[in-house]
Image (cartoon, rainbow, N blue to C red):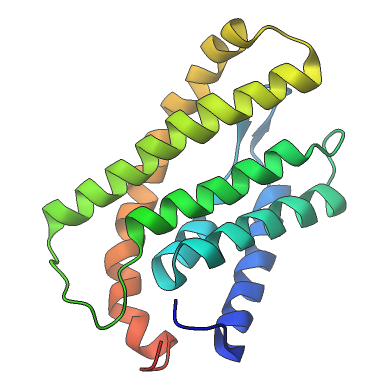
Length: 181
C-alpha cells in the first residue's frame, strides 16, 4: 500500500457497507456457531489494498455490525479477530503493484489455501472459540469440538469464493485502481 487516497477510501467505504449488510444477513447465528459472508469484503480489501487496510476494514465492519445489528454484548476480542483476519488475508493474498508476479493457478491456489487455513486455525477455531469461552463461561475444548462444524462448512466456501475473487479482481484491477496504486 503506497498511501491512502480518496479512491481507496471510497472503495473501503463501499466494502464496509457491504460487510455490515452481510453481517446482518447471517443465515445461521447460534450462540457458538456463526456462518457469515463478511469475509468477502475483507478478502477484496486484502487483495486490492493489502494487510493494513483489510485489517482496519475488518475492525470497522465488526464494530458497525455490532452497533447496528447487535446479537449479544459487544466484546472487543471479536474486533481483534476481524483485524487479524484482514492481516492474514492481506499477507497471503496481496500482490504489490508493479512487483514481478509469478501468476499461475497453482500459486494462487496455494495462496488462497494458506490464507483460509491460517485464518480458520488462528481466528475461527482459536481466537473466536476463546472469546466464546470467555463470554459464555463454557469450557474451551467442548466449544472447540462444536466449532469444528462451522470450520468444516465455511472453509470450502471461503476457498471457492476467494479462489474466484483473485483472478476476477486481477482482471479488474486496472479499471478499479489508478496506475500509481
